[in-house]
Length: 132
Image (cartoon, rainbow, N blue to C red; front, side, top):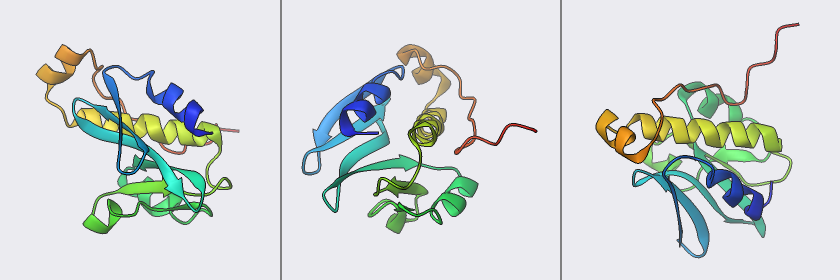
């Protein structure tokens, strides 16, 4: 996934808002809460997203994925794909979707309703393999 594809994907979420901050990073929020960032790491696009407890532990063991600088150092469960060989595009989309769901689940029902955000129904990141 490149930066343009990232921005196009993040724009599909209800009430998603885009701002450019932190040294030309594309920052995506819903209801005023951060759910995804695309910035630079070692000259490449780096994608940062919130993760669930298990995904945070498991995915940081993958090559090209690490605890997100600054956010994870503050005890938050955020990951960053910093190299092309990290997650597949499909896995990255699933992780960004879960990040959006985790973040918007923390909004009040009243605020979610006002913004047109559906009730949360988190999925796994990366997706669980299909039964054989």
